[in-house]
Image (cartoon, rainbow, N blue to C red):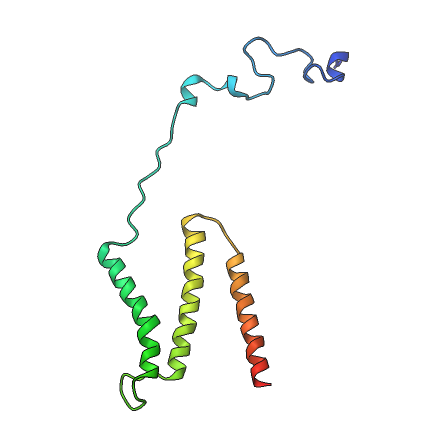
Length: 140
């Protein structure tokens, strides 16, 4: 196949001939799309409500119990009482809450948006490593 000198100089497309009137110089350009297809708009589905009013009330109540009442049961209630929480139980609740925060972050970013983000795991692991080093320095 013979390439004309105008095409080699860059003034014409590699096919050799300039595009005809009404044609796009780029194959598959906007002129190639039918007018009816360019006006179609997709409708997104309605997002469901995450929690009802009662659900949010229960969530806030549970968060209040874990964050405020659990440490108070350790500090205020005497050790012989049935409502006393030991130091181990308070530390265990703290660890469970840390894992819950990490799981919630992964659920929000991966479950709702579809983006796999390994940064959450990286910072969670980095925080655990730094806390381990801090505790090792404390015991000598």
